[in-house]
Image 1 (cartoon, helix red, strand yellow):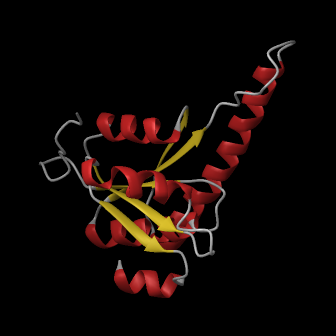
Image 2 (image 1 turned 180 degrees about the vertical axis):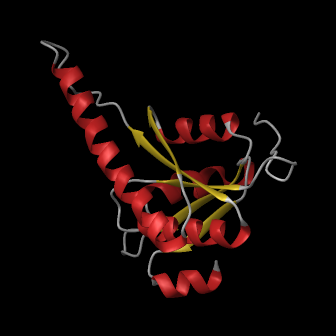
Image 3 (image 1 turned 45 degrees about the horizontal axis):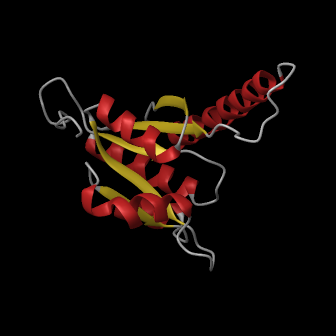
Amino acid sequence: MTAPRSSFLEGHRRKFLVVIDDTPECDRALVYAAKRAERTAGGVVLLHIIVPQTDAPQWLGVEEVMRAEALGEAETLMARAAERARAIAHVEPEIVIREGGRAEEIMKLIGEDTDIAILVLAAGSDTEGPGPLVTAIAGRAAGTFPIPITIVPGTLSDAEIAAGA
């Protein structure tokens, strides 16, 4: 069970959680969360999850090299996402990088940070469905998820997102 949210208590602020990955729709969620945080004096938490490679060779330090490369790529991705959030909404995002299963790490972070009040996802715009994260989180766990989930259509422009944020 997740701890009660404290985002509206004195000394706290509501935070919007965005999972940062290399999908095209990820930027749509970032834009919405940053604009919404700016308008409501909230915060943005950017989360990237490094999923461990189960087929990685377990010899001669190859696993550690692969891990270091994945961390370097994650830091670069997060730096770009943070700069985008600052540029479009003048918010200073929190950056969190975790290693593990995506759903598990999202739930852990929500449990640890009781100011996180809304998970913002963006639906993919291709014909193969809304995307793996939306399918996994919103599709399967929506009825029991501990916080509200906002799903942003992946086809919206920055201006369209800003108008609704």
